[in-house]
Length: 238
Image (cartoon, rainbow, N blue to C red; front, side, top):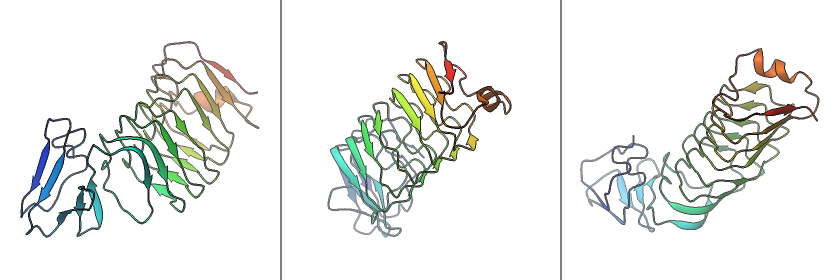
């Protein structure tokens, strides 16, 4: 994983005998071209110049030049971290997709907006982590679970953990440096540890609905929900 990530490699040549490339192997590299030996039985280059695993029917790496708006289609499969380092600014997840896998959109430096489908139920671990400009995303009613570090080190100013959510993982929104306000639904049954850790700008947290024992939620299970937050945080139950 991430064998050459962050290096200055601009060209990738895949030889005949290479049969496996780890997740994020060329993440954040300024690659402009990919070529594959005609004798390679696993990899090929697709019509868009991206590295394609034809054996497993998976897009292994997308050229970082990809920019603007991109629609993630349900009939395509992408290797984790395939989008790392791309310049996509708006991502639309196609209707019918029920789960976003771990590391699916990890490390997209220009991503600012995500449109999730009504069908979505689960967002996997690290799915949108290290997307530092990501600040706009909708909340599908079907969504029940957000994984560990799913939105860590992103750019949200406010977060609503909406009705229907039942589980939010460890560090799910940690290190969102612009985060000031959080609203948390009473449908959540499992809070991960360090959920909003190192969110230095956090000022206000509202526990919504029928939840009455705010301190009990935080202290009884030793969650360290706000560890590393420098300012004073107001907790309320409107």
